[in-house]
Length: 174
Length: 174
Image (cartoon, rainbow over all chains, first blue to last red; front, side):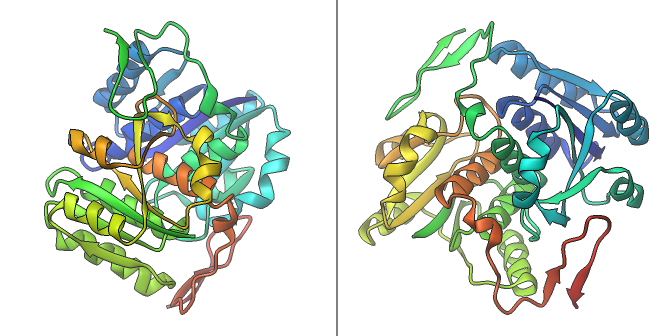
């Protein structure tokens, strides 16, 4: 299964850490890449790319000004568009159907998602109908789609690797 | 099972949204409350409390200046202290043991976690050994501890409730 995360409507002034977290979560929890739209913000792309360089694995990082173009391009490439929103249908009822799709574009909105996004999505899906966090919704969605198998993912060509410890920190590499 | 989330080392200048998200995720994904330490920040407590007032359910929100006092107090009350850190042992190997504990204090750090936290924790647990997001780590941890059953949680006395939709938004209440 191929999964690309699409972070909609990034705002350079307010969303730096939230949008960076979206990129890092996408990578750590098994997605193949992230696309950002909204304000162009090289610092975000650089932060996520730097983590990939240090910690390994394949993960694409891209920016595209027009969110509609991203959605249309991925539809054309055969991706199913899944929009994560607290107003959508419960994720737990949609997972088994979504796992049968080969390719997903997982759309993660910010505070103001354009109405047309709800229309253009193939599925509007809620990780609870409660207000919480787009980062958390993305994390639970990826973990469920991959049956937690992403937790054992190996990252190729890593410069740095954590050796898990009961106490303290151990990192090998530079 | 009783679960309290403990957000360590909140910084008023930098962490507003991240710490708010921690509180909202804790509530939405089935924890019983959150305690903040670090900078005292009434705005965070108010944001999370306001969401509880509007969207219902029981959920405690508290602040305590000394993080060590929080850990000691909860230990004394019989809680098992689980510190989420990318340097810890893989969560997938620890879940079944943790589910048998009756009460968990789930510690979510920021960028600088004091060394003693690793020592005082009963378990240092990693949601992947990759750098990503404390919000995501918390979300996956809660979802796994509760076997995703929290996704169906009902929130009592809610003023607002989402009615899930395939397209668009429907909220009842005021």
